[in-house]
Image (cartoon, rainbow, N blue to C red; front, side, top):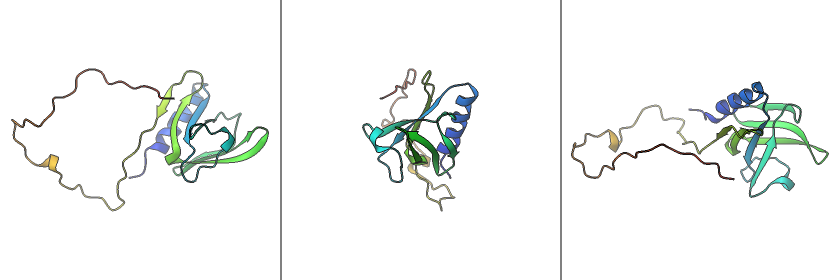
Length: 142
């Protein structure tokens, strides 16, 4: 299967624009293939403004996000492989999404292999942990 990241990122980008918000992305600048202005990288990451008024020749494809922009008055072509995209959010209110690591599914894996979890189990298995209770929580790490 293909990564869901580019599809979700495109949808969020369009949703932010439709709501008159300024889309920003957080990029892992240390990944291979990332072309960003290195003088603005902090802690291995860079935040980029994707507002249509700030960039030109924007493309968000399944493989990468690319556009032209000016940094310190100098034009630059930016290339962000989709694997290096950490988050997309609105500058005004922080609404958006942080992307986690996606599992890699081999290209030839079409059949579901039987796993230990699929094997029949006894009802009185003492190794089973009780389900967690309470609300799940998320937090933004900067």
